[in-house]
Image (tube, rainbow, N blue to C red; front, top):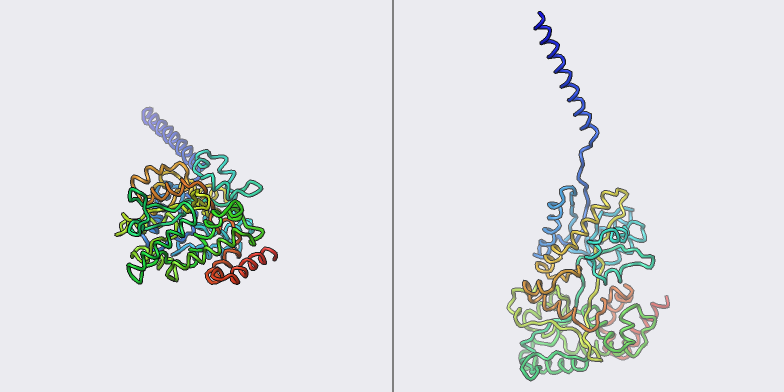
Amino acid sequence: MKSGSGRFKYTGWLCAVLIIIGLTFSGGCAGKEEVQPVEITVVHGWGGTAQTHKVVREIYQEFSALRPDVILKEQASSDSTIAVEKANDMLAVDRMPDVVSTNGLSYFVQNAVTKGMALDLMPYIEADDELKASIHPSVLESWTTEDGKLYTLPDALEVMGFWFNASFFREAGITDADGNVKLPDTWEEFFGDCERLDAWCEKQSSGMSVFALEDIQVVEDFLLARLAGASPEGLAMASAMPSDFDTPSFKRTLQDAARLYSYSQDVDNIDNARQAFLDGRSVIYFNGVWESDIFRGTGIEGEIGYAAYPTESGASLSYISPSSGYVVYDNPDPGRRKASVEFLKYMLSTKVQNRLAIDTGQAPSNPNVDNAMIREDYPLLGNALEVAHGADLQIKSISSVWDAAAVDFLKVELPQACLTEEGRLRLVNGLNGQRGE
């Protein structure tokens, strides 16, 4: 009996200990909630079938793979215009996705700020040295508000000069003593070259011309480059919205726009302008370095080069412009705000920036990206970036410095108005009239 009673007491004591341990363990677990991943939504215009679109979507998806604590949902459209319009419609009913990729459509930035829904990114930047170092100085210069706030970060810069077919320049005799292409230093040399190229084109075939200009190219690529390169007065006008368009520099720019058209075949969209260049039906093509992605692997890849714009003084000029980029919703949920900023930091990281350059032809926004490495892997883009960044003067795109109403007015009126003295006067008065409204 004694031994049986002892076994009962021992067994009872052991069970009690196990129950206490179990209760302690379950109590400890009850005190710790399972951490749920944060879900954020990115609205973007990279939903098309082009290879560049596929690459960007892959990069977005890799963020989720690297960050299991964040679920990244995409609302993709086939282009940025559609995507940003959808996001803008949401603003109208006081809603906004966590992240919107504007891809240069800056009206959304202003609308989101006006609605009080855009997150000020500056506190996050100031608190994170790594993030701060990945932002190009021109972004901070262009997008920091007077009260020190920042509402957008681009993952690429808008870098523009112009493309040219070096073979055609050589065949037209526009070379130095060693037979290398001699690019123009001044605008008069530029138009002199146009005259020689035009004469050469006439001897080749009726389908060839110096340019195949789509009207928006003249406004977005040529106009400010010509104006900024005219004089100090013109440079000032190209750097901020002018208070007066009735100036010698602007009038000369309009006259030269007419000269430009005189060497061009008409095309109705940028795709046809590009195709004319690819087909060898035009010699010079105005557009940014990102076109390298389309030219890579084509029959003319080895024959084309990139050039900075000339100026009256002989200095070289290019566009280095930080267009609007990602806008983050000032979400009441701090976890979603933080995850959204982490996504931006990921997009600006050196690794991602290198991939965007090599695989999509975009100009890196992160100043720490090594262009020599890009040039080694992707000579066409690397050389174009080197030319543009090495220019003596660098200006911003017209949509970054002039009012949208003025730019839209020029896109509609410039092609015909620039051709006559009466039309140019009407254009100047129309722009000045907008300033007075």
